[in-house]
Length: 166
Image (cartoon, rainbow, N blue to C red):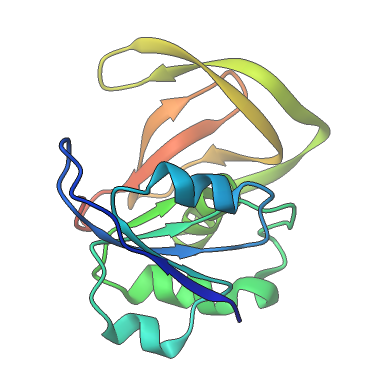
């Protein structure tokens, strides 16, 4: 397990946060940590029992090249997602793990979706162009999950109906 911590100054936009960043073997975890440099970022290679008892303002689950359907590889993260009171943000695979934990339908696409895509932010109906690179899509939401943004392929941003948000 690699465990790193960056302590930085207070962000003028959202205040200083203590963030647990779970590295699911994404190629971009270090870049994400640098984007969060105004906060204390604790980078860990996996979720462990100590994380549940520690104080974090938010937990971020990174992306990966792994598939969420191999639940045995992510059993600790799925249990953490379902039982924590800490707000959890998932990027790519992290988002798919949240969806999987709450019973959303995830499917494997025949071809990898890669490149610039338009997504619609559902609350305001605004459109944004984002980069995507994934083979699995969140196609159907469970009763506990709300879609926040979607592309023509799938839901891209989701949130839990009742869990605390930051």
